[in-house]
Length: 144
Image (cartoon, rainbow, N blue to C red):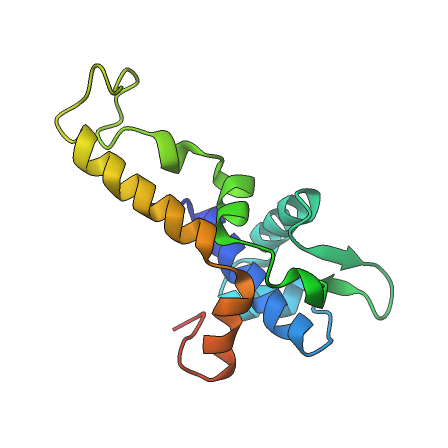
């Protein structure tokens, strides 16, 4: 459903959010290890997230990536998905057809549109703060 970059971007944001909730910044090596992603690939994803102001970075000995605590509840999953994958997941045809529309639908159009709309609603209503609660209580995980 999401690109590999997007999957890692969501996981990286959640990982950074956990550390930020403890008042800490975290580096690329730690993030890559935590989300089980190649370091160079993680660095590119983090650049995109910084560019879209989803996460922040600080340079220097006490630097790293972080999310201001007051922003944890404001960052929605839809922000991350849109920053990395764009809005194609919310508009694309289930069969990959370019001209699939309401007036000229593919055989899966109506059912897939409903699923896309539900996905967008879920991503728009889920914030990063909600997700770190499960990690902190050990009810959820980021890597196997």
